[in-house]
Image (tube, rainbow, N blue to C red; front, side, top):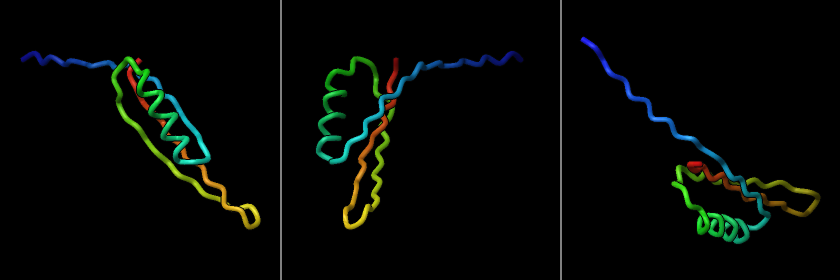
Length: 68
């Protein structure tokens, strides 16, 4: 018996955004998605916080994975 195997090859690219405010990240990601002409595969979000003296520093980031 002969088995047939079909491989699906998807060429992917990533775009990374890094902002200090969540509204800035939202605007950047939405602008990118508005102009995206290929298929979206995934979006990963991350938030990091640190302190410097009395100040809290936030980092909001997103990685968009899309077809090239």
